[in-house]
Length: 137
Image 1 (cartoon, rainbow, N blue to C red):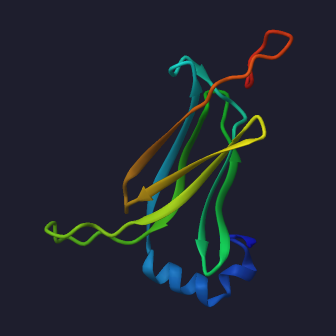
Image 2 (tube, rainbow, N blue to C red):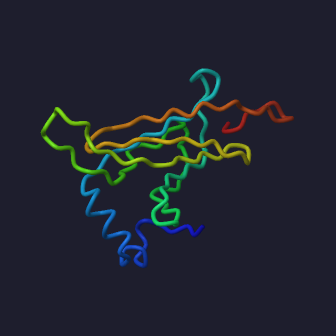
Image 3 (cartoon, rainbow, N blue to C red):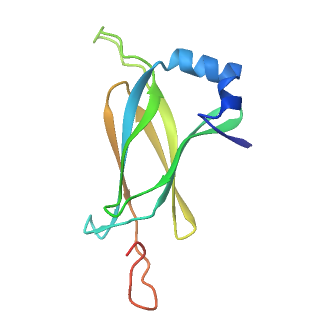
């Protein structure tokens, strides 16, 4: 399966991009919080990739790392607009989150809604190094 960046010029010229944006003409916001030891130790430098499969292509919307506090703030993701009719279930868009820790991938699915801030907590078990330090320290 091919990987393609959502913001690449080549992908923006495709029909898949045009159809996706037509359906998802609003934005939702994803926050990542990575920690260990029941939130006591923030995990810095955790690589996080937010993606989605569109027409047999893995489209990457975000690829980055957590800061010293174990946080990535306000990743903007395309979502459908929410209708004002509150008697129907609001439309949403699902995304995949891959967090890489000690060469292992932690996988999460996230549902995003228009104009909503979503928090994905990533709890990891730190590995102790021979020098006594922890991953991320």
